Image (cartoon, rainbow, N blue to C red; front, side, top):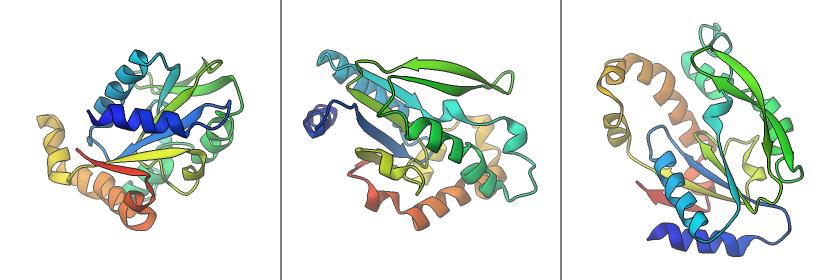
Length: 196
């Protein structure tokens, strides 16, 4: 199983008392969450203390990322998260702090709620999400895995109702993904690329 080999390699990369920070990057519906669950199962079997963050847990309220007057793809890529806040209060601190207080998004109420996360004794931190290798965040990771999956296959994984919103995919999601793939070049920057 490829996860076993990857986990063994990652654990050997840990060179300090600080937790090893791993990014699981990939475009929407590339299989990141499933892959993370497989890694977590391996870590449990190896008795490795870990914590997983899902970057989509930290998106901002809808009014900050929809109908802002900017292009839909710009809203998705640049406004979906408070990039500067997460840089300064999450990425900069997660290797040094044993406790973090972060805003978690409540989709039903469209609000962010602060929650405290205890990272004491954690050996490995997994951050899973899209666009993780953007310029502001890439250097905070010790290792990054990019899950590469063709657009057609990813789109087929969407439910039927969502698939009817083709224009939204074309103007919002796919345009942002194209920007990421051509400007940031995540496949080139990743330590490993895995086809899913």
